[in-house]
Length: 449
Image (tube, rainbow, N blue to C red; front, side):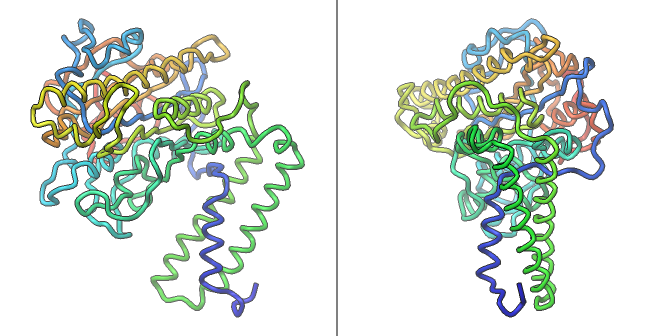
């Protein structure tokens, strides 16, 4: 297409269409060496992060006792049958979550710091900045080994702009994963879309001819956009050329995704009907998203995943457990006993859904008979402890799964001194054999995990 007939409007339409393409993860330069990211028996290791919002009633959460002589408290009773397959870690902190000179915005900072360990820039504009998240650090080292380097899921609407919390962009609150300091990875909230991304849209559309036609359309679109973009480049100023270069980098990433799709093909779809969309009930929505993540791990479509059960500051109510007031509203309980009881019910509701996910992973078997949970490291975490005080220390943290035998399960690891949350993540990535020496504000790999 000639420069004369190119328009900014048309280019942006093309960009929007590109963002709607199926997300086949990119091949990576400098992928990890053979054997890295594998259990001793050669099975793939999986890493997942599950986020729970608005803190917890910590005297109901924290286990009684330490080390291997501990008892799960009220909130974690739904996890009792997994006691020997998990560990609770107490004493972790996110220093960049605290207000400091930035003032209000603890909920935005809670979600933004939880996997990055970086202080988010306080802005409601497009100049957002945080850090690379732990899941994306892992994904970079494992890229090219599975169809998707990572899978990002949410039960919230996707928001990448606007002001959400005391002058912080909504991008901070609604995204767990950050590919770079300035680029959050938008999660998918529709289980039907996740299913189609993993397995295609149905037997007829998964025929070899249909898949090839789809790839041909993608290649045609990429050629069209590349030609238009290069024609436009000479007319742009320096700043716009930089933006165009970022855009073309995205185009090149999509080309790599197509290459990965061609390399791996589609796995066999599981038995049973595909999800029809976002269900009306929150519990069903959560469990469908957990199902999708479990299926992605079982089929080795990815080895890295995140699920934002709800963003911090969420004011969702829970009529299914008799809580009709909003979660965020209740979290500022000011020691009101009735509100604390309702919050404890919400905390337990979330651990029940986590237990459902662990059960799904436990039921899934590797070729050698081990469970997928045996070869997983699943982190359940929150960016606040006492939400009434907006506390970012002694954060809720559970690590479930045996990590292929690398994790010391069946314990309550109560730290004698506060440590950055990222120390835990650094330790997990190193146990996967990944050559990582720092994540965000980490100081050293957490020992004893």
